[in-house]
Amino acid sequence: MKAALLGLLAGCVDIANQGTDWQALSAITGELVPEVGPDPDPLPAPCSLRIATFNVHFADDVDNLVAQIRASTFLAHADVLFVQEIRRYISEPTSRVSRLATALGMTWAYAPAHTVDNGGVHGVAILSKYPLAATAMRQLPYFDQLNAEQRIALRADVMLDGDPLHLVDVHLDTRLVPTDRIRQLNPALTDVGARMVIGGDLNTLEWTWVADAVPLTGEQAVVGQEQAKIVDDFFAYNQFERAVPDDVVTTRAPIVSMRLDDLYSRGLPVTEGAVEHVDGSDHWPVWFDLDRCQM
Image (cartoon, rainbow, N blue to C red; front, side, top):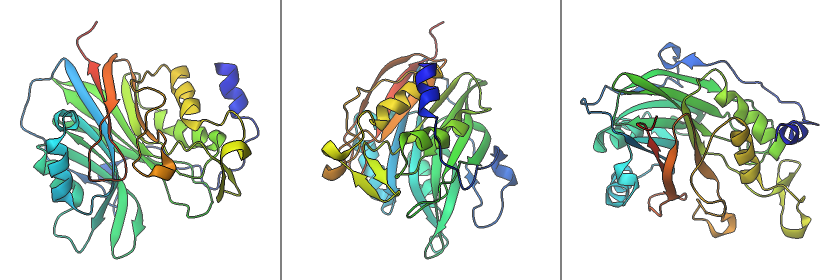
């Protein structure tokens, strides 16, 4: 496995920006100022912890999104929810992440990655029924390509009866070859901790890109470029496990019927997990259950 990963990293192209170290959310100011919600009401920590990830596609209709989550079978019972592509606008009285989290009875940490038009920002969030501590973010390596955006990783410790579990939420670039996807992802695992959960929208498209713009599909594609499985191998080498089958689909767009989203755990065993068909976005959420009491 190590040899395969080292081979994958051979022949890399230059990264336009290597990103940053982890920065405490409390130290970040300006138009990309993060948000951290208040501690939730105390709850006993469960033996089975459910974590989910959901790209909410801007969360333009928070009330509908809340209704869809509440009506779901599995996502409704998530203890921790990673969210990607959630926006905040200065024209709205409160942020979308705060409305979503409050309606679900959770606290939150939100980090914008970049600005968008009309006074908005676009980023990722971690929602939790349990207190969050040590919130931080880091800019991930930036690749200068068509429609490039700054990508970030958001981290927080979920406190379970005073026992921290490290969490990292990511949203990676779309037009990356496998080598560069691993290079962008790798810093999200660095300097976090042994017992951790990482996940989000990994954008593991099966296509090979020409000039970062045109996808090669079918017989034109380079053999062996199944990016989701390559990312799985990377996490397995770093001692993470996952739960959903290889061939599940996490996006609703017929032209992109692929596994773009996933969750990985290190230090806590995964007992079960799946993709759930929940409306409100162009992605399906992924969830898994972790056993905290198995010694």
